[in-house]
Figure 1 (cartoon, rainbow, N blue to C red):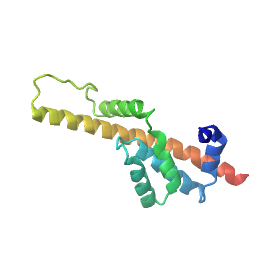
Figure 2: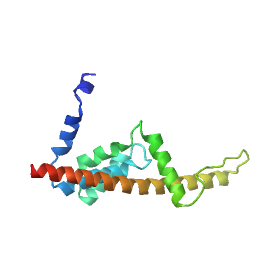
Figure 3: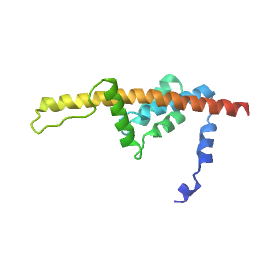
Figure 4: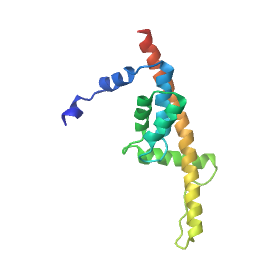
Length: 147
């Protein structure tokens, strides 16, 4: 409990601002982490973020922190929104019709359609949120550098 009392916004912000590297390096790391955090790969988002940040030569610490965009409090709203975005882009009905007498092949087809919508929506929402968060962090680091 004592640890939770000692955490405040200034400490979290200072964790961001104490990272070494250029503003672009740090912003790239966080943006990649946010992008990875939008995918429904529970438990693998951090590994995906670290892998992509290593490939793109971004800040690994900020990439890991960026994946925290999805957490137990945001899973359901984030993935529901991602699914809706994927459904809109594919111009399909966002509802899945489940009937009692579905055959196994129909279940696989419904599951693949659901997965495609969710992954497409996750990619688009991830790109959007990564762009916004990357720009904000880039501005923060440029302001810090001027001080």
